[in-house]
Length: 191
Image 1: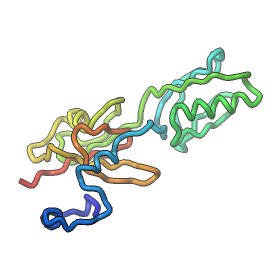
Image 2 (image 1 turned 180 degrees about the vertical axis):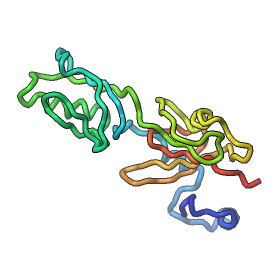
Image 3 (image 1 turned 120 degrees about the vertical axis):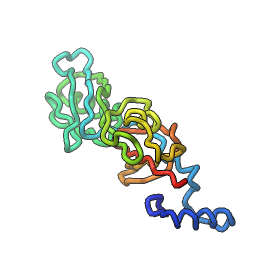
């Protein structure tokens, strides 16, 4: 059952079902779902800004942005697909393209300078879009958004994240790491 479909009455029914031990769902319990929103290796996407260095080739070194189509326009080789790639994978793609007739044995380094933003909604004082910084957690995102409102449930948040090309919504603890493009919803408490 999706968290978004739960209603106040539905929560009582679920609590009774779990309390009776009758729930044999294939979905993991709410406490275990935080692991499913843990970040893996960062994947590039539109709006990410990076520094690409081709060692020994100053004219090919510079700052580049992933465009709306998910590509990076690079000198000599043209567009290189970056969407969904890690920085290491992009390094390999650029090196391979440069090695095919442009640069002998290219060594390439990619460093992300500016990440895509994350979004926070719900029971925070200043909901909206905020710049992502490496190592952020849900509670630091709440702090950036002006803190909790007096109605906020402070022991968990709902994180919507794209995993394997599919948007997934999960309950997570406040210390759960967040990623760019995440939508964090701070729910209202019921008591």
